[in-house]
Image: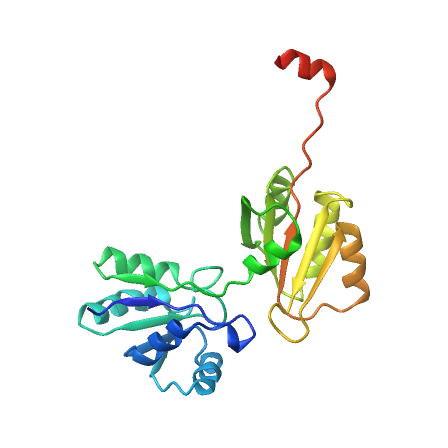
Length: 236
């Protein structure tokens, strides 16, 4: 039966694609790509000749219903983003919701997404965490950070190299200079790097060294306040 496949693609290293993802991309009738030029590089590398069509945040509101009708008509369609798993800070949610509401079967393949390796190698607790993705660039950014400063779970952000210093400055100001931060960039690529330390230390590093590549920033949770002996006695 025709269906919509959500297919994760490598976040950098092309070896990170799964055999199943390659098979689905080869067998699909159509691939919806966030940027067809980016996806074309991946398809050429693996000798995949499936036709492509653009599907991105600027056209998904107008095309999702038509895609659902195509699948209902018998076409198997695969959705990919430029890197990682569609729907995670990338287009995908709207199409999935539209297809489900239309009775289309949706199957999501497991695969690459940037925040998982960055979170695990941060060394911060990751059994429970808060994923924020990209913060608002302007309106609501400061208030959102102020609220997150009180969060006791590890918090994970995505950020571009052009705004990462600004984010680190805001973390120092809002979370405090001593809050622990792990900044990973170029994950899975040749120049992958993770810089760990206090917010002030990580800020100093990327103030001195020009940030390059997409970033995943993990921030430790707010330390729990130690209870006094009187407070412990009251609980008993």
